[in-house]
Image 1: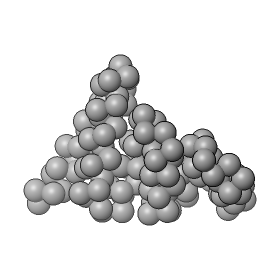
Image 2 (image 1 turned 180 degrees about the vertical axis):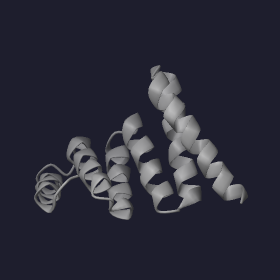
Image 3 (image 1 turned 60 degrees about the horizontal axis):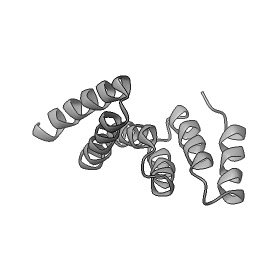
Length: 110
């Protein structure tokens, strides 16, 4: 699990390199590991804004939004992750996105 020092190091990197997707993605991963899902989703969305084809950022954003019970937003991110995984030929993330979409759809239908 990421500690506060790790999170703060990645926060500083987003200030130092605000236009790069990598510090935002790293910050999102650290926040996700620390179970700070809402903030992690914001960081992953920032990575996606800087590099729209970053499939794993879309997938992790969807996971965080689902963990935060923000089902519609999770569905949108998971669908984009799935689309990118198919286009990029990544079968593992494609299967993960499919499973997440099914989980979210179950919640939306409940």
